[in-house]
Length: 321
Image (cartoon, rainbow, N blue to C red; front, side, top):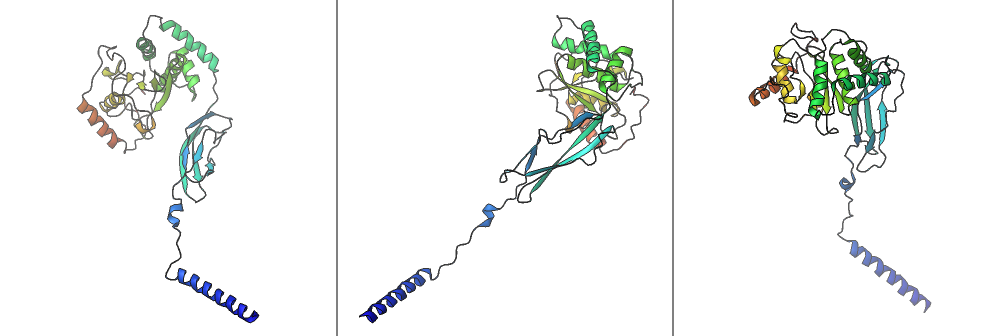
């Protein structure tokens, strides 16, 4: 009886094993689709902007800069600022790099500008600005009239090939005090007065290897929504008087094109674009020149070709700056 039970148990095990083999017969192992899990998307770096400091200041390069990734919650963000010398004035390149856990990487570049320390305190410069604004502005003026009052006041200061410092505060103060200076002084005084009036400004300058160095401002009257060019610097051309007050990109490129790009030759991609429509009445100066749409397009086409040429910043006899 005992042997019979053992025989039955062995036979049952054999049948069970055979059944398992028949269920698996002809089936292939399931393959895992690794492509769905592959990470090929690079991180995104946000918040990289130009940095401006004065001599001796320290820089926190990662302040306001974040790196995000679609699969890695903590991509590694590094900064290469090895070329920056905080003890010397100049413009330096900084490179940000973000790498995720899969090895995907992204980079972003910006510049660090080291400015000299100001000889004039900002409070002292503000006192000078307030004095000038009190002299030229009235409560009855419209916003356009107030802006034009600043523009024409600075425009009527004779151009002199003098710069007082690399710092805009110094140049603004001494330009207003001595009523003499070059294009950087016109830019600096414009910036000081306009910002003191509560307007936002962006400093603009000609591209590297333009025919000459030149500086001016973009101005916003609505908190940064729209911008216009503001350049009171004088030129020796008869058609320049009163032209460059709150003008558009189209107008400025056409004006510069009409003078063979001796005045304004900026890299437009570095700055916010202006509206196509002119600011305000546009006829605040009765002799305002107008350029046709066809001429403006010719100017942009010519500028694209001109941007490929490297000049030596030589000043033409027709340009004051």
